[in-house]
Structure formats: structure tokens, C-alpha cells
Image (cartoon, rainbow, N blue to C red; front, side, top):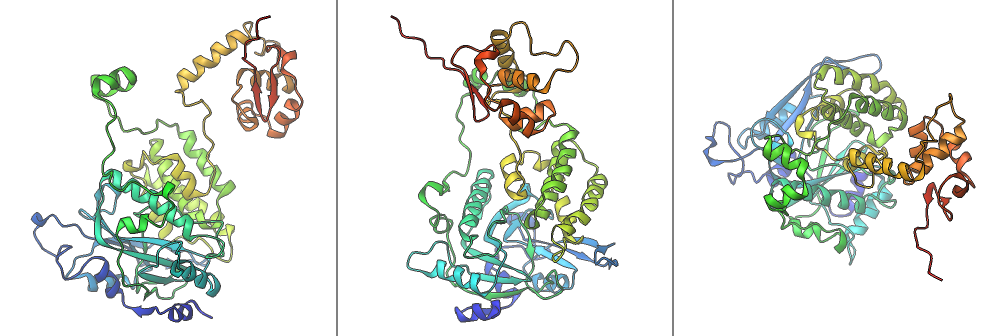
Length: 482
């Protein structure tokens, strides 16, 4: 049985692209601008992006295409959709933007929350409907389900478009991640181990446009009830719900308190007029490291997001040469194709879309989100939440107590790995096997070999010290008096 048959079985019916976009963007009510309308009404509009022209090489990859971006105006929206339906690919989303750029800082309102749900067949789609239409639904029943090749897209239309204040964007992203985890499970997807955690800015193939395999993206109406953010948030367990009342991040310190508590920040920002953007100061090695990580660990459902993360790492490392980053992405495409030969990655809109993140606005994109969207583990520096300089000062102080002569240091040529590993473990009690292996340039099995069963008290630490689960432990309890 086809996905369409399951939709019809559950009361869905096919609708046009204009039916869906009229509902989302409230066409006919003056919510978005008409073409040529004065800007004094302070309206924002959706954006459409598509690829035109070019040719497919012998490997089926699109080359020489030209990407276009267009504002969707109320009075010309239908004509623009018709034009972009002939594109190689075309995407939009449920947001409106100020101006022509669909960038994070240009976002105005969210009119619909849209999710990907891959790995669909008649069984998983039935399970999805069962879980959202039971007496105790696990997630909300979508307003529209879009058939886009091998995927479905779930559209939740908001009864009142949400203003995208800086903190609101972060809260809505968290809510979308958590709802994704509920929807994307072993009952509702054949690819449940690889959920797509996407931000609210994610683009989706337009209704009426082309799918990856050359078919047509189709829309089905499922539920006529629009949602409030509070309703969507209410489907999450109480401990996972976000506080939608917090449009702005709270200020926790007065300037005098900040001066005392964060003297480095105060000197940099207040005294010297520097920027407090919270971004990384990273070396180019980090960018090259991520190139290697993609080749080592990119998985089928995260290939595009790995490229997106590459652009973000380029920004964090001060690499602004678009041609260089694009060349690096293009060089990865053959490998990404090989990850799943039945579903090649291709070279159409994925690279161009990923390059949208080569923008300084993404410099503060957090590590935890890069890890989630890419599906690649990113090891954290273990400094117990200290700055590097402070961490090193603490480690040197520990060395001064436990090894004042610096006997762990190599003074007579290359030391044996056993001595080097144990000495490092002694000086860095918080380091695990992987940390030690990386720091010393040895293999993790070698580290495990020389630390297994090792008794610290024979190596210069106080009596009662022991090694367990990759860490040195010292009993600091004072002995009782006689």
C-alpha cells in the first residue's frame, strides 16, 4: 500500500500549494507585503530559493546551475511558485524575513513549524497516526503532510505567528528538537536511529516543485485546527517544556557585580570597547580536523548537516574564502555519495545551501548543536569548566606537590610508553583513556594496557591512591585522632 493510500484512509485529502501557503501566510488579510507596497507598514515576507539551468554529468551530478533567491509577495506568490516549480530544486519554509536574505538575523515571524520524518512506509505512517490520534496522544496531529520523494514533511500552522526575538528563536529551536525526538522513534520511522534535528530556519522543497527523483512534491490536508505554541509545547513532558514567556534573556548581574565577577570581560568590553560576542577564537587546525571527521564518521541522514557544520567551523576559524570552502565541500561529495550508494548525496542544492552558513552570524553556533545535527561526537576539553590558563595553573600546582622534581619529564631520551602514560595520568587525574591517548599521541589500547591494575601508591602519590575507570583517585579524608 502507498503512503497516499494511508493518508486517504485516515481522512486526509490532497490540496494545492496555494491552499497550504495561503493558510500559513494568511493570504488575503494583508499579513505579508504585496509587490511594490511601501515599507512603512513594517511587514516581512517569506523567501524562496531555487536552482536553475546547468546540466547533469555522467555520474548524475548537477553542474553549472544558477541559484536564485526571491521574495514571495502576496499578489505574485502564485506566479513565483509556478516559476520555481520548474527549478532543479526549490525550497522555502514557514518563516517571514525582513528584506531579501533568509538569514538568522533577518527572521521576523514563524508562521508554521515544519518537521522532516524519513524512513516512511505504510506501517510507520499508520503508527504515526495512531500515536497522535489516541486518547492520550504522544505528539500533535499535523495540519498538512507533504509527500516529498522518500520523506514526509509535517506542517503545524500557528494560529498566531510567533515574533522571533533572539531568545524566542533559541526556545523554539529547543522545542523543535525535543518534539522531533518524540515523533522520530522506532515505530514511526525505519530510520529511527538517525533523527533529523533541524533548526526553525530549515528550508523544505516547495509544494508543486520537484523531488530528488524527479517526481512532484504533493500536499495533503490532515487537521484543520491551527496550533498555539503553548499547545505544541504541552505535548512535551513537563521537565522538557520550554518557558515561552522568556522573550529576552535575563540580566543577572549589575555592571559593578560583572566587574568583580568577570574582570577579563569587563576589561575587554567596558574598558577597551571590545566585542562580547561569545564566539570562539579557533585555529585553522579545527577546520581541517572537521574535514577529517566528516570522512571518518558522516552517516546517511547527516551528510548535508556535516557540510553545514564545515561552513560554520570555517567561520569560527576566520576562513572567509567562499571558493575554498566550496571546493572542500565538492571534494567530499564522492565520499558522501559512497555512504549510501542507493541514495547518492548528489551535488545540487546541498552544497549551495550549506554555504549559506559561511556567515559571521553563525560564529556563535554552539558545539552541542553541531554535534546533534551532524551525528558526529565532538569531544570536549576536560578542564572542569576552567579557562585554559587557569586550568594549566592548577595542573602545574598539582605537579609541584606530587612531583616537585619534574621526574615525569623526559630528560634522557624517549621514555618508555608505560612511564610516560602513568606519569601523565598522575599529573592529570581528570583525564580519561581517550584524553591521555590524544595528548601523548599513542593508541587508546596502549593507554588501557599500561594503566590496567596500576597501583598509584608505588608511583609517588599518597598512600591510599588508586586508579579506576580511567581516573586517579586520592582519599583526602584526614585520619581520625587516636
